[in-house]
Length: 355
Image (cartoon, rainbow, N blue to C red; front, side):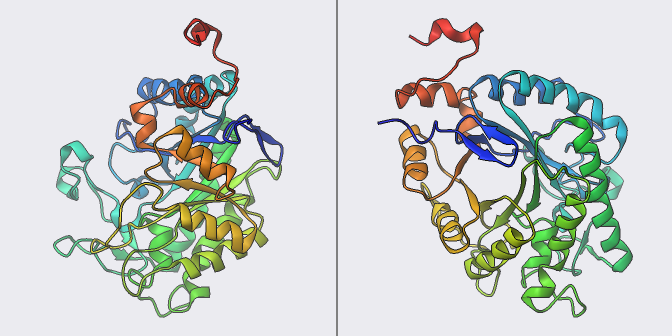
């Protein structure tokens, strides 16, 4: 039987050669938002390793939107050149370069994981963070600044400007990061959004900024290229954002022209209770796909070829994103094809390893 995981997928003008995508994963290796040779090798090796889509890590639309001082950014034109080089290599490997545009909100200004991951003070190179409400993620942290209308408009314009640069850099997929407790998710979740204006309270108000960002991105993003949105399907916390709201949002996003929902979960609050296990987020992707008809991507503790094959062949999702497993094995596409006895094109330089 022919592998469904290695069947092509067409979205607008782009054809993905298979259903394997590399999930955006922070590398905490940039200086002033600039990419370097680490990013070239990291992303490029996964393109030569057989994945159809390589999504670059959460790339901040503004300096204050970075998770850490070492995050990639796309807030100034000078940052484009290295990214363009990386994308050209990815394309040369018959893979599609994507970028995840992000703003970390109250979870910004944090140290890299190997430096503890805690807030970086202004004295040590950090900055004041912003959020829908002046609520800190951890109780012992300095509260973020609640965004006023001017600040909200700046966020929207920053996403728009970053999208324009993403086009110039040669990306063929753009993903808006609305998950993991970062700024857009902070507005969506009633646990982090206590506003009483048109950006808070009701479901319609809490999703308003996300819809405005989508419209701003679409104003610069070519209509013939795919647009993804990553969401957290649930906060895994009482009174938080939930799967029912995720389905409702996904219906609206489909109507607004979004092509695919990248379905993750959690990250809004520190007291979340996540039942980790293989495929633990796949039912959310399946529900959203079934209830809305939109394409979905599944991600989270998916680690082997047969597991991924079952997700696609049973119609639970349309793409499978790999994060940690891709770190362990840059050649996922090649090795999974071997496991599933799928015939694929290898890089000529590696062909002698096929047999």
